Picture 1 (cartoon, rainbow, N blue to C red):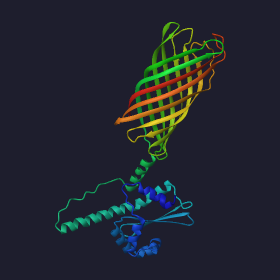
Picture 2 (picture 1 turned 60 degrees about the vertical axis):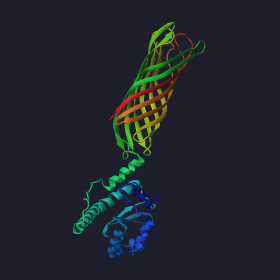
Picture 3 (picture 1 turned 120 degrees about the vertical axis):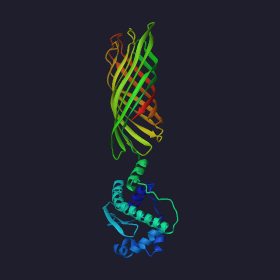
Picture 4 (picture 1 turned 90 degrees about the vertical axis):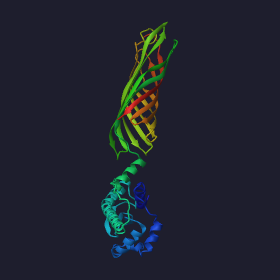
Length: 392
């Protein structure tokens, strides 16, 4: 977009500014003997200060920005005219091909408002003083005008821009709750019968999310997440009910970046351990995995109500074993994960969460101890955490 459109777009984001339609403004200027040549030429502007003042008073305009691009699109000029018709500043910036970036636009507007705002405030004070004096002279009663100190126009423009393009925050969130899930393991052998182990999971789970560093004008954030889950259960093997357990613990670092006020991209990396351990028996005693975590996701924000996150990744296996060692040394390369998370904030700082994760692992046992035949296992886990938490 052109330099004019870029700067206009930022100004339009402020709810403290009212921009006048160009055709309406030029029509009013013509009624005060001001044409385009008068706007462009410095000497003509100086000669027509009174006409500028009367025009701006008639049109109820407090600040006039005259923008021009010249030098084959390499130079941007913004002339600032105050409410009394005087030139307040003549600002110039080097640009390329007649276009300005958002950072360039904000930089030049910072200087524009730094010059214009004090003059406009002084003008408003003078106008209010004149109005009060006229009312006193006319012996008419009227309510007292109270001046309310508000954020500067530039501060408001930046705040409105963040509302459109997104702004992340630092903070901490701790959630604890119930774990619901299911595990299904299938073991196949080349010669002997296979083994299936499936069990529901009911236990406890928790998550700590800490976002501690912001960057890129608060559109990006660096954070860390710790999580854990534990579920005891019983397994019936060889005519016995065996006391068993599920455990999962891990942590990761993540980078988040706001695409706009609704969508946030996330990328993460970390490590986790996962174990399903059965009581001692001669058939099958469980699995243990240690894996890295690499993945990405997208988060959709429902304003202040909450967020929905979808993601997935790979789980490079660092080590794996069959508990008890019956199947010998395990070899495996990758596991896979898919996840979804719904976080709602019905009350200030109180977070209700529903988190789902599915993981899938495959292992090969080429040199089993007993029985002496190669084996392969596939492991599929579904995990749901229902939680309540608090955000700081």
